[in-house]
Image 1 (spheres, rainbow over the protein chains, first blue to last red):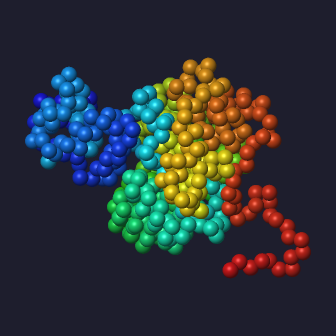
Image 2: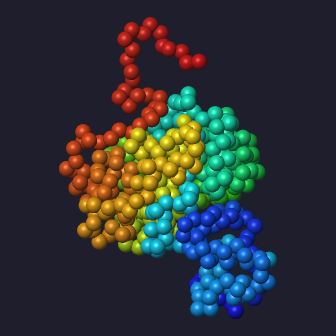
Image 3: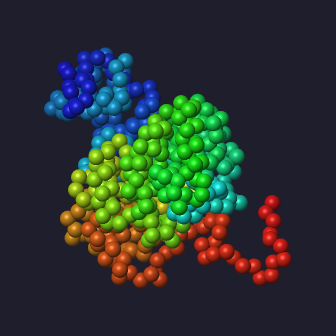
Length: 95
Length: 387
């Protein structure tokens, strides 16, 4: 599955992904804040499900299998799009 | 701060208005000492406060910020480079995962300091100027300040620092120089950052004369929309009432996502409200900064839903949220009403009927010269000598 967020780079869900090593996650009531120490961008992860998905990406051989394991079928498209946006802002990267 | 999206997402804004676990935009004024005396200084800086946090206390603050995952701090003053432990604190902060953006007037930013700064990761520098020319800048910041600031910019560029910021408080006198300011930043490979003049600190006395006119504000709004690469620190969200929202969160973050730690450790709701009414506590209190952020009754109140008050009937309230709390407070306007620079003129109307006697005065004045003029001693035979 390949998802392209508007105006952004392609996201290869068949690849293995992980949190970018320069990114810190800070838990918040709505989910988490992600801060990238390299590009100094602050990104809002607006659900706890998305936070746990991002935090556990590196335990799955692909983003797709992480989505299958952690997200309900009806919501996978939405979460895949969210991962594509996070990939574009380098919160997550291919391992 | 760059969020991953423009605001206007009501759900996210509601979350932010209820307050975060820790600030995302924390200003830390390291010292009230300053070798300039800018006429609009938001912290009325000049003299060092004898009760300033010690080096050890400042490091303890960094430890707390690190534990709370405050990813970066905006360091200012006064002139922060006048603190003798400035570079130690910078290195300590960065080593503990707390990035630093600091504002300087450039007077102490020598060639050697620029080289030193270039070697540090996670440090951003903002050099302040308030005009594209010495004449306009120096009228506000003092004689020689433009030359000093541009020399510092040259040192940073020569040292290969990369994209530092040229930081400008927008006034009636420099608003016509926006293109010139952008060109100035370009010349040094820097990024332009514009912020709003508040009637805070010594700005309380100069706001009337310096704040942009209504026509200038509309011109500024259009200029900013055309240049999303110009940083604003979310400063001009009151202009979002003109239509398309400006880049940023577009809300008052005071006590919710923003706060100020002043040089003596006092914690205020935002950098523009140094006044006892917005004092939440002190980092020296039991529980430290975290205790203040999490437990202050003032901050709890600021995180409650706010009434739109007199703005409730305005169709643009959702865009500007009534504007800046500090701007209202120090012009004597009610906090649940229009901003003094409301783009529809509601603030000016309110100001024309507000009684001047009710206007609160900024606190913590460290100006070298009293605002009321020089103090005359009864019978001084000699000037007091400062050690």
